[in-house]
Length: 343
Image (cartoon, rainbow, N blue to C red; front, side, top):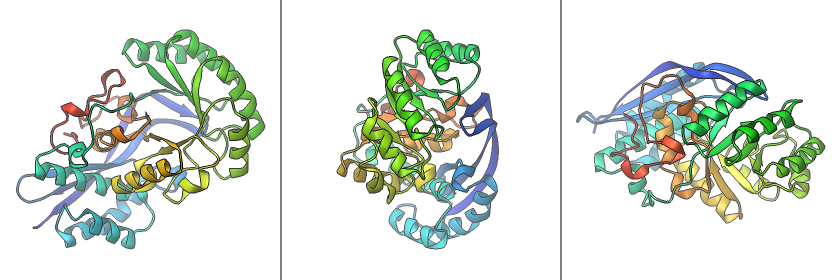
Protein backbone atom coordinates (compact mmCIF):
# COMPACT_ATOMS: atom_id res chain seq x y z
CA UNK A 1 0.00 0.00 0.00
CA UNK A 2 1.18 3.51 -0.76
CA UNK A 3 0.31 6.16 1.79
CA UNK A 4 0.32 9.84 0.88
CA UNK A 5 0.81 12.45 3.59
CA UNK A 6 0.54 16.21 3.93
CA UNK A 7 0.12 18.87 6.58
CA UNK A 8 -0.87 22.51 6.90
CA UNK A 9 -0.70 25.15 9.57
CA UNK A 10 -3.95 26.83 10.59
CA UNK A 11 -4.65 29.86 12.75
CA UNK A 12 -7.86 29.44 14.72
CA UNK A 13 -9.56 32.55 16.17
CA UNK A 14 -11.15 32.12 19.58
CA UNK A 15 -14.70 33.18 20.35
CA UNK A 16 -13.32 35.24 23.26
CA UNK A 17 -9.83 36.00 24.57
CA UNK A 18 -8.84 33.11 26.82
CA UNK A 19 -6.87 33.84 29.98
CA UNK A 20 -5.32 31.45 32.48
CA UNK A 21 -2.79 32.08 35.26
CA UNK A 22 0.06 32.00 32.71
CA UNK A 23 -1.28 34.41 30.09
CA UNK A 24 -3.89 35.28 27.46
CA UNK A 25 -4.49 34.03 23.92
CA UNK A 26 -6.87 35.24 21.20
CA UNK A 27 -5.89 32.71 18.51
CA UNK A 28 -4.56 29.15 18.53
CA UNK A 29 -1.97 27.80 16.13
CA UNK A 30 -2.75 24.20 15.10
CA UNK A 31 -1.18 21.99 12.44
CA UNK A 32 -3.48 19.59 10.58
CA UNK A 33 -2.10 16.28 9.23
CA UNK A 34 -3.73 14.19 6.50
CA UNK A 35 -2.83 10.60 5.58
CA UNK A 36 -4.44 9.09 2.47
CA UNK A 37 -4.44 5.45 1.37
CA UNK A 38 -4.64 6.08 -2.40
CA UNK A 39 -8.06 4.44 -2.53
CA UNK A 40 -10.12 7.47 -1.63
CA UNK A 41 -9.87 7.42 2.16
CA UNK A 42 -8.08 10.05 4.24
CA UNK A 43 -7.36 10.22 7.95
CA UNK A 44 -7.17 13.58 9.69
CA UNK A 45 -5.26 14.56 12.82
CA UNK A 46 -4.32 17.78 14.51
CA UNK A 47 -1.45 19.13 16.59
CA UNK A 48 -2.15 21.83 19.17
CA UNK A 49 1.34 22.56 20.49
CA UNK A 50 1.91 24.33 23.81
CA UNK A 51 5.00 26.48 24.41
CA UNK A 52 4.67 25.51 28.09
CA UNK A 53 5.79 22.03 27.06
CA UNK A 54 8.43 23.27 24.63
CA UNK A 55 6.43 23.02 21.40
CA UNK A 56 5.21 25.59 18.90
CA UNK A 57 3.64 25.39 15.46
CA UNK A 58 7.15 26.03 14.09
CA UNK A 59 8.63 23.02 15.88
CA UNK A 60 5.71 20.84 14.78
CA UNK A 61 6.23 21.84 11.16
CA UNK A 62 9.96 21.21 11.52
CA UNK A 63 9.61 17.57 12.63
CA UNK A 64 6.50 16.47 10.71
CA UNK A 65 8.42 15.70 7.47
CA UNK A 66 10.51 13.14 9.36
CA UNK A 67 7.50 11.67 11.14
CA UNK A 68 5.45 11.41 7.97
CA UNK A 69 8.40 9.83 6.17
CA UNK A 70 8.13 7.02 8.73
CA UNK A 71 4.44 6.62 7.89
CA UNK A 72 5.16 6.46 4.18
CA UNK A 73 7.99 3.94 4.61
CA UNK A 74 5.83 1.59 6.69
CA UNK A 75 2.96 2.08 4.26
CA UNK A 76 0.25 0.46 6.39
CA UNK A 77 -2.14 2.57 8.51
CA UNK A 78 -3.01 -0.52 10.57
CA UNK A 79 0.62 -1.03 11.65
CA UNK A 80 0.08 1.42 14.49
CA UNK A 81 2.53 -0.16 16.93
CA UNK A 82 5.36 -0.29 14.41
CA UNK A 83 4.78 3.29 13.27
CA UNK A 84 4.59 4.55 16.84
CA UNK A 85 7.90 2.89 17.77
CA UNK A 86 9.65 4.18 14.69
CA UNK A 87 8.29 7.70 15.13
CA UNK A 88 9.61 7.77 18.70
CA UNK A 89 12.98 6.51 17.49
CA UNK A 90 12.99 9.32 14.92
CA UNK A 91 11.65 12.15 17.09
CA UNK A 92 11.63 11.44 20.81
CA UNK A 93 10.14 14.72 21.95
CA UNK A 94 7.47 16.83 20.19
CA UNK A 95 4.44 14.91 21.51
CA UNK A 96 1.88 17.19 19.81
CA UNK A 97 3.44 16.47 16.42
CA UNK A 98 3.44 12.73 17.08
CA UNK A 99 -0.12 12.94 18.37
CA UNK A 100 -1.33 14.54 15.14
CA UNK A 101 0.09 11.62 13.16
CA UNK A 102 -1.31 9.10 15.65
CA UNK A 103 -4.81 10.58 15.35
CA UNK A 104 -4.69 10.71 11.54
CA UNK A 105 -3.61 7.05 11.37
CA UNK A 106 -6.30 5.89 13.80
CA UNK A 107 -8.88 7.85 11.82
CA UNK A 108 -7.78 6.23 8.56
CA UNK A 109 -7.49 2.72 10.02
CA UNK A 110 -11.01 2.85 11.49
CA UNK A 111 -12.43 4.32 8.27
CA UNK A 112 -10.88 1.49 6.25
CA UNK A 113 -12.62 -1.01 8.54
CA UNK A 114 -15.88 0.95 8.34
CA UNK A 115 -16.27 1.46 12.09
CA UNK A 116 -16.09 4.38 14.54
CA UNK A 117 -12.87 4.41 16.54
CA UNK A 118 -14.59 3.54 19.82
CA UNK A 119 -15.90 0.34 18.22
CA UNK A 120 -12.44 -0.60 16.99
CA UNK A 121 -11.41 -0.43 20.66
CA UNK A 122 -14.47 -2.32 21.88
CA UNK A 123 -15.78 0.54 24.02
CA UNK A 124 -19.36 1.36 25.03
CA UNK A 125 -20.45 4.67 23.42
CA UNK A 126 -23.11 5.23 26.07
CA UNK A 127 -20.65 5.18 28.99
CA UNK A 128 -19.29 8.70 28.59
CA UNK A 129 -19.00 11.48 31.18
CA UNK A 130 -20.15 14.96 30.24
CA UNK A 131 -17.46 17.34 29.11
CA UNK A 132 -16.90 20.48 31.10
CA UNK A 133 -17.06 23.94 29.54
CA UNK A 134 -14.22 26.27 30.53
CA UNK A 135 -14.62 29.82 31.83
CA UNK A 136 -11.33 31.69 31.48
CA UNK A 137 -10.09 34.41 33.82
CA UNK A 138 -11.65 37.79 33.17
CA UNK A 139 -13.31 40.63 35.02
CA UNK A 140 -16.21 39.40 37.17
CA UNK A 141 -18.96 40.81 34.96
CA UNK A 142 -17.53 39.20 31.81
CA UNK A 143 -17.13 35.89 33.63
CA UNK A 144 -20.75 36.15 34.74
CA UNK A 145 -21.86 36.73 31.15
CA UNK A 146 -19.80 33.77 29.89
CA UNK A 147 -21.14 31.56 32.66
CA UNK A 148 -24.74 32.49 31.97
CA UNK A 149 -24.21 31.85 28.25
CA UNK A 150 -22.73 28.41 28.98
CA UNK A 151 -25.62 27.50 31.28
CA UNK A 152 -28.16 28.76 28.73
CA UNK A 153 -26.45 26.57 26.11
CA UNK A 154 -27.07 23.57 28.35
CA UNK A 155 -23.59 22.90 29.78
CA UNK A 156 -24.06 21.56 33.33
CA UNK A 157 -20.33 21.19 34.17
CA UNK A 158 -18.12 24.28 34.31
CA UNK A 159 -14.35 24.47 34.69
CA UNK A 160 -13.23 27.79 36.12
CA UNK A 161 -9.73 29.12 35.66
CA UNK A 162 -8.21 30.74 38.77
CA UNK A 163 -4.78 31.84 39.98
CA UNK A 164 -5.39 35.52 40.73
CA UNK A 165 -5.56 37.75 43.80
CA UNK A 166 -9.36 37.90 43.40
CA UNK A 167 -10.14 34.20 43.17
CA UNK A 168 -12.87 34.25 45.81
CA UNK A 169 -14.72 37.06 44.04
CA UNK A 170 -14.56 35.15 40.76
CA UNK A 171 -15.88 31.94 42.31
CA UNK A 172 -18.68 33.86 44.05
CA UNK A 173 -19.62 35.34 40.68
CA UNK A 174 -19.63 31.97 38.95
CA UNK A 175 -21.63 30.28 41.68
CA UNK A 176 -24.16 33.12 41.76
CA UNK A 177 -24.61 32.88 37.99
CA UNK A 178 -24.75 29.07 37.99
CA UNK A 179 -26.06 27.85 41.36
CA UNK A 180 -26.89 24.37 40.08
CA UNK A 181 -23.83 23.72 37.92
CA UNK A 182 -21.06 21.30 38.76
CA UNK A 183 -18.01 23.53 39.18
CA UNK A 184 -14.39 22.49 38.89
CA UNK A 185 -11.44 24.80 39.47
CA UNK A 186 -8.08 24.93 37.67
CA UNK A 187 -5.29 27.10 39.13
CA UNK A 188 -2.76 26.22 36.40
CA UNK A 189 0.11 26.10 38.94
CA UNK A 190 -0.86 29.56 40.21
CA UNK A 191 -0.79 29.04 44.00
CA UNK A 192 1.72 28.29 46.73
CA UNK A 193 1.04 25.12 48.75
CA UNK A 194 -0.24 26.92 51.85
CA UNK A 195 -2.30 29.31 49.73
CA UNK A 196 -3.78 26.31 47.91
CA UNK A 197 -4.87 24.65 51.14
CA UNK A 198 -6.52 27.85 52.36
CA UNK A 199 -8.33 28.28 49.06
CA UNK A 200 -9.42 24.65 48.89
CA UNK A 201 -11.05 25.11 52.29
CA UNK A 202 -13.29 27.96 51.16
CA UNK A 203 -13.76 26.46 47.68
CA UNK A 204 -15.35 23.49 49.40
CA UNK A 205 -17.93 25.87 50.87
CA UNK A 206 -18.94 26.80 47.31
CA UNK A 207 -19.54 23.17 46.36
CA UNK A 208 -16.53 22.88 44.04
CA UNK A 209 -16.06 19.30 42.82
CA UNK A 210 -12.24 19.23 42.64
CA UNK A 211 -9.18 21.44 42.17
CA UNK A 212 -6.76 20.97 39.30
CA UNK A 213 -3.01 21.64 39.50
CA UNK A 214 -2.95 24.03 42.47
CA UNK A 215 0.86 24.37 42.63
CA UNK A 216 3.77 24.33 40.15
CA UNK A 217 4.46 20.93 38.65
CA UNK A 218 8.08 20.89 39.78
CA UNK A 219 6.99 21.27 43.41
CA UNK A 220 6.08 17.64 44.05
CA UNK A 221 6.44 18.05 47.82
CA UNK A 222 4.10 21.04 47.65
CA UNK A 223 1.56 19.00 45.68
CA UNK A 224 1.68 16.30 48.34
CA UNK A 225 1.28 18.95 51.06
CA UNK A 226 -1.94 20.14 49.41
CA UNK A 227 -3.20 16.63 48.70
CA UNK A 228 -2.81 15.58 52.34
CA UNK A 229 -4.62 18.66 53.70
CA UNK A 230 -7.22 19.61 51.10
CA UNK A 231 -10.89 18.89 51.79
CA UNK A 232 -11.33 18.63 47.99
CA UNK A 233 -9.92 16.06 45.54
CA UNK A 234 -6.80 17.19 43.69
CA UNK A 235 -6.14 16.62 39.97
CA UNK A 236 -2.68 16.65 38.42
CA UNK A 237 -2.31 18.16 34.94
CA UNK A 238 1.06 19.83 34.46
CA UNK A 239 2.38 17.23 36.93
CA UNK A 240 1.09 14.40 34.70
CA UNK A 241 2.68 14.73 31.27
CA UNK A 242 3.86 11.27 30.21
CA UNK A 243 3.44 7.66 31.30
CA UNK A 244 6.37 7.75 33.72
CA UNK A 245 4.71 10.60 35.64
CA UNK A 246 1.68 8.53 36.64
CA UNK A 247 3.34 6.39 39.35
CA UNK A 248 5.28 9.43 40.57
CA UNK A 249 2.11 11.40 41.35
CA UNK A 250 -0.04 8.48 42.49
CA UNK A 251 0.37 9.38 46.17
CA UNK A 252 -0.01 13.11 45.53
CA UNK A 253 -3.28 13.44 43.59
CA UNK A 254 -6.70 11.85 43.33
CA UNK A 255 -7.12 12.38 39.59
CA UNK A 256 -4.68 12.06 36.68
CA UNK A 257 -5.41 14.54 33.88
CA UNK A 258 -4.08 13.32 30.53
CA UNK A 259 -3.84 15.15 27.21
CA UNK A 260 -3.01 13.79 23.79
CA UNK A 261 -0.78 16.81 23.16
CA UNK A 262 1.28 16.03 26.25
CA UNK A 263 1.68 12.28 25.85
CA UNK A 264 2.14 11.87 22.09
CA UNK A 265 -0.89 9.98 20.83
CA UNK A 266 -3.86 7.73 21.34
CA UNK A 267 -2.01 4.52 22.12
CA UNK A 268 0.08 6.23 24.80
CA UNK A 269 -3.03 7.87 26.25
CA UNK A 270 -4.67 4.48 26.65
CA UNK A 271 -1.56 3.15 28.39
CA UNK A 272 -1.64 6.12 30.77
CA UNK A 273 -5.32 5.55 31.53
CA UNK A 274 -4.74 1.92 32.45
CA UNK A 275 -1.65 2.78 34.49
CA UNK A 276 -3.56 5.43 36.41
CA UNK A 277 -6.30 2.90 37.15
CA UNK A 278 -3.70 0.41 38.37
CA UNK A 279 -2.46 3.05 40.82
CA UNK A 280 -5.94 3.73 42.15
CA UNK A 281 -6.39 7.09 40.46
CA UNK A 282 -9.43 8.50 38.74
CA UNK A 283 -8.85 9.71 35.18
CA UNK A 284 -9.68 12.87 33.28
CA UNK A 285 -8.83 13.64 29.67
CA UNK A 286 -8.22 17.28 28.90
CA UNK A 287 -7.19 19.25 25.84
CA UNK A 288 -5.56 22.40 24.57
CA UNK A 289 -7.40 24.93 22.37
CA UNK A 290 -7.82 22.48 19.49
CA UNK A 291 -9.65 21.90 16.25
CA UNK A 292 -12.00 18.95 15.92
CA UNK A 293 -9.22 17.44 13.82
CA UNK A 294 -7.86 16.23 17.18
CA UNK A 295 -10.72 16.73 19.67
CA UNK A 296 -12.90 14.23 17.80
CA UNK A 297 -10.36 11.46 18.41
CA UNK A 298 -10.01 12.33 22.09
CA UNK A 299 -13.77 11.93 22.48
CA UNK A 300 -13.47 8.23 21.60
CA UNK A 301 -11.50 7.69 24.81
CA UNK A 302 -14.43 9.02 26.85
CA UNK A 303 -15.84 5.60 27.86
CA UNK A 304 -12.55 5.00 29.75
CA UNK A 305 -12.79 8.24 31.75
CA UNK A 306 -14.25 9.52 34.99
CA UNK A 307 -14.11 13.14 33.84
CA UNK A 308 -13.83 14.86 30.47
CA UNK A 309 -12.57 18.34 29.64
CA UNK A 310 -12.81 18.25 25.85
CA UNK A 311 -14.19 21.67 25.03
CA UNK A 312 -11.19 22.98 23.06
CA UNK A 313 -13.11 23.24 19.80
CA UNK A 314 -16.14 24.77 21.57
CA UNK A 315 -14.03 27.81 22.47
CA UNK A 316 -13.23 28.57 18.81
CA UNK A 317 -14.97 31.22 16.74
CA UNK A 318 -14.56 29.02 13.67
CA UNK A 319 -13.30 25.49 13.00
CA UNK A 320 -12.79 23.99 9.56
CA UNK A 321 -13.74 20.57 10.95
CA UNK A 322 -16.86 19.19 12.52
CA UNK A 323 -16.44 16.45 15.09
CA UNK A 324 -18.30 14.43 17.70
CA UNK A 325 -21.46 16.23 18.80
CA UNK A 326 -20.82 17.83 22.21
CA UNK A 327 -24.03 19.86 22.50
CA UNK A 328 -24.86 20.45 26.15
CA UNK A 329 -21.72 18.63 27.24
CA UNK A 330 -22.93 15.18 26.12
CA UNK A 331 -20.30 13.23 24.17
CA UNK A 332 -22.49 11.57 21.54
CA UNK A 333 -20.18 8.82 20.33
CA UNK A 334 -23.01 6.59 19.17
CA UNK A 335 -23.71 9.10 16.39
CA UNK A 336 -20.11 9.14 15.15
CA UNK A 337 -19.43 7.90 11.61
CA UNK A 338 -16.49 5.65 10.76
CA UNK A 339 -13.14 6.92 12.00
CA UNK A 340 -12.88 9.63 14.61
CA UNK A 341 -15.81 11.63 13.28
CA UNK A 342 -13.68 14.58 12.17
CA UNK A 343 -14.95 15.74 8.79
